[in-house]
Amino acid sequence: MLPSHFIADNLPGNTGYTWTLTTRLGAILREVESCYGARDQTWTILGVEFGPNNPRLWYPGDCKHIAIQLAMNAADNIGFACYQIAHECIHLLSPCGGKSAILIEEGLATVFSEDYAKREFQMTVAASLASYTNAAKLVRELLSLEPNAIRMLRGIAPSFHNFTPDTFVQAGLNAPQELISELLVPFSRE
Image (cartoon, rainbow, N blue to C red):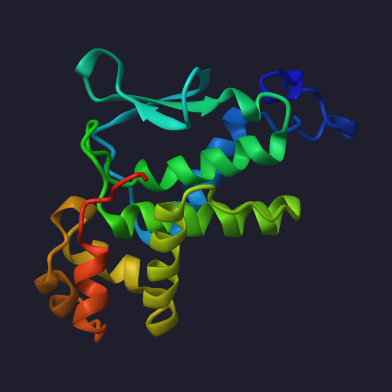
């Protein structure tokens, strides 16, 4: 595990500290909120840890606390760790308490994390499962029609789980019905 994941060091000239996963989480979360709207602040974000499974949000104690669990394959790679954090930050906008995400949310998480890794670390990271690739493709299609679509939708219904076809109408989005229908199905990780 990289010490830089958790140990901050002084920058030259006493101008601050080096990045850790905690401070990167804060920066990524600010960017996500700036792009897609405020998060549900009734949930407390505890921080980042490494777990035995795939990256995910974990809700310890069933008390509106959230921990981001990263996969062990990110323990020695800052770019990959930040890619995983960026993905999970989308889910922090409107936590579902462990319920499955809908396709638009999972697709946005994939799009944002891929774009973030490319921009910040010059890494091309592609989802390893076709379900994530397809979800990202559909979200990119929506964003090509209206770059602010997610912010517009969340302005009507802040939680992804509350999106309906009518949410698109109320937001003034003229997306094809077939695309809207696909974006609203429960995400299946296959």
